[in-house]
Image (tube, rainbow, N blue to C red):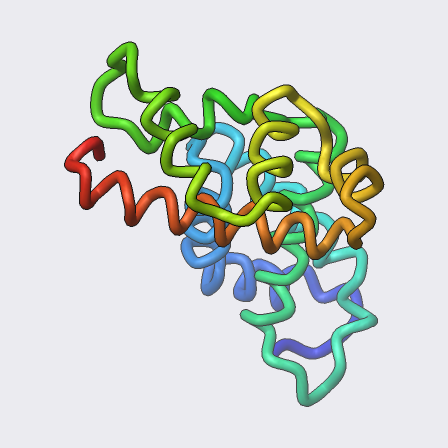
Length: 163
């Protein structure tokens, strides 16, 4: 661990020791080498500015990766990165074929009414907040149901050999 203060040499040691870990973590998150490098630079800049906040017994690597994750999330919010639900569902299918969505809709009919409505509303482009309001559930519950539904669909499509 480095001593706090304006010791640029000590910070350079910290940078050299952890830059690969931070870069690979950011690359895992954003899947874009150029963006990962930019975010890594911003991460270390924030770390340098916030070095005085590092607790003596805190793990430096964990602290840096937390800053990196927060930097990534902040960047996503700024850019409002979104993917349409259909594009997301298409990413599960090996090759586009006309009956994919109809097959998925048939599978969805096996689920409860709330899951069916959630699926249709996501397909129609509604946000989690809008769906949660319409279904009278929390936004977090909406996300959990959607996650579980997609996981279930993926398993069912594998059984049908559509994935």
